[in-house]
Length: 566
Image 1: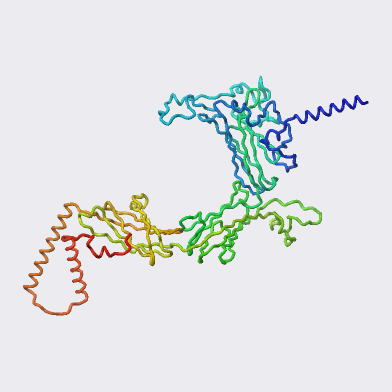
Image 2: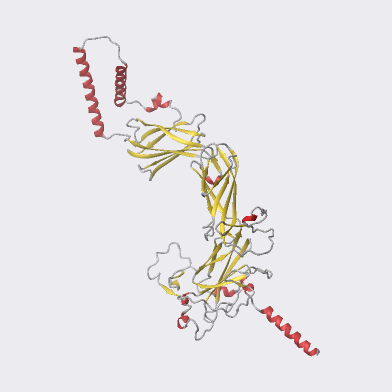
């Protein structure tokens, strides 16, 4: 009797040793992380990571194993795994894994791996451009043997279309070019698929708990007698019951949007972006509840874009609540008495559900829906800023021939709001599209925003002029089209002006002599119109004198005493 017991003990011990030695998916896909066996809600199409892993067909290498260096010809293959997380619970989260081959290698349209024959890993900077012979490529045909195999069997390899858990590959028309096996692992479960140099996977999050999770993937390439591991990757993703939202703010005269400092008495545009890449909320009724923090009250809108104007300076707290009413299938009605929970009916909608995450009500059309909320809050500062800039006068400065290398124009500019500390002038073509010159200067304005800006134009023509006044937080712009004459005239133009000037002098002298000869002197009072005409004639002769008897602008007391020229 004791011998039988001893024999049974050895059998149990041997079974325990064999069970302990069995490789499971969790052992291979945990990427060095150890976690206790936990009961998870099943993901549709996924399997438990406690299943056995066929290590003979899919060998498992620890990180640092020297076999990694020789698993791919030409260098090491890496994998990049991305996700569109965060994901609202109930929506889909999508993962994309992309293989990155060594330099000089790529996958062609047929799924072949192409090598550039004479490509070097790091060519010198002075190397001549590659010739057509240098660019000769060849195919790394590491699956040539599979061309002689059928889908269901192969003469020398009976496991060429089998996953690590023994399940057969799904059939695809181009299965011979799907030579990579991707095994994803998360939430205590795994998913297997085949593909080329990239693969995409979407997972519904209805059965995934809230919080951060890790998605890992192991990639194998097809081999003659076994599959060969080539890369691993992992990424953190987040499942949340709060609608992921982002808010962008824009103000016309704000100099730096990212500093959360805005200008008083100028509207701010708020644009709400909901992160919903799987379009889970497409059929939902969404509302936006704003509290701008300035005592203006609550504002509820159905549009994702709104604007608000702060009329006071100071610091304010902006709060936004986005609510989505999502239609979902109704839960089955049970005859048991209602318990305090997240589920309510239309007749019991007054029950307290403030501590629940999700609530459900009956719709008039017999459907059901759940509420999801998203929250956003930030602090902003409102200050005085430059609201408007106007060009009220443009004056061409007359220069002598020796000074007239450039044409000078004075721009008299005013602004509303705070006083500027800098001015920038952009001179462009008449369409205001092609910039020709940019000049910026610091300025000091102590009392009134009224200044004169002098700018030089090298050539005659029509220009678009943009004048921007700014301070630390704001800036405003004024634009105008200006036609500039040449700074110095050509010889032909000067001769024409001289001839016309002499002709005008002789005509004036002749008119004066005739007037003295045939007109008697009659002292009468001049009318206002006559006085203006005479004043105009005096101004004309003054300009005429300035042309023929120019004086240096440095000695002109009017120019010298003109204040505020930039």
